[in-house]
Image (cartoon, rainbow over all chains, first blue to last red; front, side, top):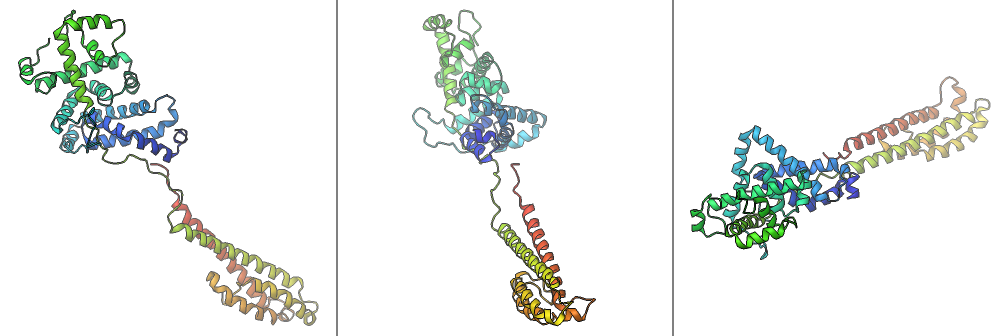
Length: 195
Length: 211
């Protein structure tokens, strides 16, 4: 880390090796497009290298994720200005990348490809702020504190964004009969009805 | 979303999933959950949603995001050539110095005052210097090291014989001195040229920093 802070590219590349999967997966789940996510990840690592002297915090992971998050926000703003780009990129969406672990353990059972694609589509529909909270806390398993640092918001804001994001996803999954906590017939009966 | 004040609100339910409900709110919340089927279902649905998100596959990045590292040395084309050029330049500079010494020694023992007597004394002195400095080609062939052997074999003869000429021709240097001077100029030009060439080869090859 010290060598990387002195501008040693080889040392920084060891950090890239350690964190590139996390950074790319956060970018992909936030942006929903493989190529855009790869570009955003590359930009984030470049920005991190340029700014690594300013890193004073305890968690490099949270500091790096903050840069990734900002890069993702930039991408989303650009997409909003040029919607044609995101339409083009939508074609690539199927080729997001191969799962890293083809034979996951019993705890982390892989979802069916279709379900994973559905969840990604539902994530794309969330407001960006809620999406990032969900991606960091649920998909990547960050603590509230780390997510707060990465998002540069107070802890309470993380909690409320996460809760609203989860609720919207729950409603969307229930509407499609995809929630395992409910039998399919029950879900269609109670579709959208708050308790 | 739960709006009924009797039920747990969304943030409480969400925090319960992560076991992050404030300790002071926990007993009330747990007591309510135990008796409220609606909140139990809400909690189960949210937990299932979070569970599905946690089991999303981790994707392999499509490429490496390592930054380009500056290479410590140039690949084996330019660097050895530049080193050779520099070595040749050093050799040519040494030849120049030796020729200069030879040139300085020749007139200092100059046979102007006693031409015929001094001639044998001058020739042995000049000859070793010239033999050690093998780059005074009479024809002026600036072909680096290759020109040295013929020059070395040519100089003893030209240094030994023309010494007496100095006394005869007072205005012009003798052919030996002339060839010494030509050799100096050629050696200096060669040294400078080779050095500049080696610099030109190494300068554009500097590795670029991270882009």
